Image (cartoon, rainbow, N blue to C red):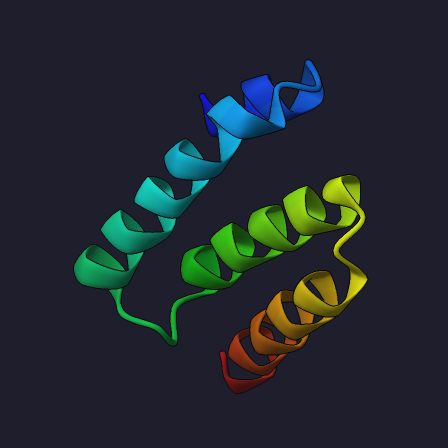
Amino acid sequence: LGMMHRSLGDLKEAEPLLRQALEIRRKALGEKHPDFGRSLLELAGLHRDRGDREAAIRMAERAAAVFKAA
């Protein structure tokens, strides 16, 4: 649902949903699971869409570390 809102340009609605998905995946799968990394990338894209380049890079780097470890 968060990605749907993001694709429609509704970034304000997308962010809490994407963060909720991240937290669900963290609790259910752990921070080393690729699906957790995917959620990080989705949030990175949201930050990029908002123009927050630094936050986007931080999230993307964290996702890359998850993928590399997996």
